Length: 403
Image 1 (cartoon, one colour):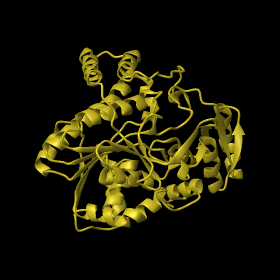
Image 2 (cartoon, helix red, strand yellow):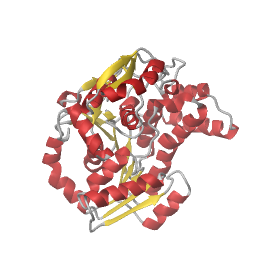
Image 3 (cartoon, helix red, strand yellow):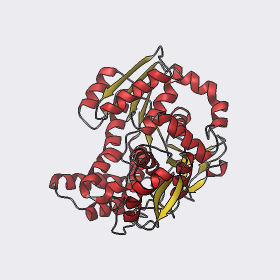
Image 4 (cartoon, rainbow, N blue to C red):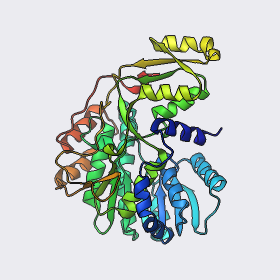
C-alpha cells in the first residue's frame, strides 16, 4: 500500500469522512473555479511540499492553460510528476517543473523569460517551531518566510502578475513563537508591498500527515519499527492535505485584496490531541498501545512486544519552547466575513500599518546579516519591537530534546 493511500486512510480515520471539509463551497463555486483555472496561467513556488502538491493537483485536474512548478527539492519534484502522470495522466495545457530557489538571482531571470503569470502561489515556508532552536536556522526562517516573500512579490508584480498568494499559519494569530511571529510579519509586509497586485493569504489548522509533521513522524516510526511518542496535553484542529490545497485556491482565485482565508471551526473541525491521533493510527494498523513511562522504556520494549501486535508509546506533558496550547485564526477586533462561504471564514484586512516599524525590521535584520554573528535574543528583540503584543514563550527546551 502506497504512502499516499495510507495518508488518505488515516485522514479519513481522524475526520470520519472521505469528503472535503469544503465540499459545499466546492459545489457552489465549481463552475466559476473551473472557468478561471482553464483560462489562466499559474506559477507555484514551493510546489513540491505537502501543501504545494495539493495545490498543484487541484489545479492540474481542472486543466489550466499553464502550470509551472518550482521547488528546491529535485526529488520531490520528480515524485510530483510521477504521481500526477500515474493518477491523472496528461492535460492539454503546459505543465513543467523547475528545480529553482526562489531566493536566488536565478528566479528573476526565470520570471523575465517566462513572461507574466496570471496567478503566483508562494507555498515555500519554514514551518517548524524547532527552527528557533539556534540563530542560524532562525535566520534561514526569516529569509524564507519574510525576505523571499517580499522578493517574489516584487518580482511577480514587476513582470505583470495580478494575483499573488502566500501561505500563512494559524500561529500568526497572537504568536507565542518566532515561527508564528515571522508569518505575522510576513502578512504585514504583504499589505505594505502590494501596489498594483492583488494579494491574499490563508491561515490553516494543522495539515494532517504533512511532511515533517508529528503525524508524518508516526508513519516513519511505524515503517522503521520504532516507538511512537506524542504530547498528551496538546490538542489541535486538523484539515486534510487536499483541503489545504482547496483553501489556497479559494483565497487566490476568489479572494479580494488583502483577504486572509481560514477554515471555520464551528463547521465541524475536531479538536483532537496528538496522543489520540497516535492511538487511532496504531488501531488502524491493528496494534494495541503499550504506555511507557519514559523514552528509554519505549526503546527497550520494541523487540519484545511488536510481534504481539502491541506498540510501545511514550505520552508526555509538553514543556518545549513555542508550543501554543490552543489554536485561533483571528483576533477579536478583526472584521470577519462569515457569510460568503459555508466552511471558510475571511479576515477582511484593513489594518493600519506602522510602516516605520516594518522598515526598521529590515534595517535591523540586514545589520545582523552584515555582522555575521547572531544570537537568538537579538532576533527576539527585533520581533518584539515590530509586533508590540508579541511575547516570546521560552522554556529553555526545544523539540530536538525529544524522541
